[in-house]
Image (cartoon, rainbow, N blue to C red; front, side):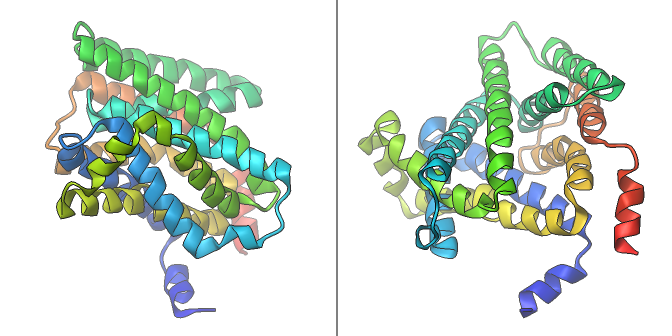
Length: 298
């Protein structure tokens, strides 16, 4: 075991999870502050995917592994879901506050839990998610503003793409190809979406050293770093408790938004955030999972 692993093992797993969220939304804050004025949100998202793909390919070297064509096809679909999710998410946060966009985006995972789960918890979770989105869009946002309407639509689209990523990603992870598929999927998706952003748009990342450094920072903070951190937390917590902690993510994004972007949420945004956080907790919770975790640790 390496010294890095020993250090990671001394850090509480929930703290690792929070660190992953802070990293991801700090990258989003950098994109909002410095990149949206230099290039379109679509191009910023492409750079995020491309940088993360290069880093993960160099670390994982997935092409040395014997992956079937079916796995490669699934990895490509996953990469396209992630890329589209990033593009719609960035279009969302370019128009509405970061924390608000993240809260609405979490409707995607809640819907996956609703369709896969049964019982009163998933139904209440879906209801709370709907109330949360209504509170944010009806009270928190100036819905009469066309930009707010477009931002809301992009946020919902990002949530739908996130749901697709969850479904495909879980199948690849269950087969033991999670990280390798992520690396390949992001690389293929970056190549396939070049015509969408155009070569001149890609060149926008090289317009100055500062812009290039910001692009690299977004790719590292938002994708390349959070994924390994989440893997460490998932290995130590188990999937049930890890999913339960996902309810913290909207709150983490709101904290980053307040500190970095100086956005103070209003009553509607806070109410919606709380409803969606409760929805995530209810949708992912399974009876007895805390007892199982205690027995596992003992």
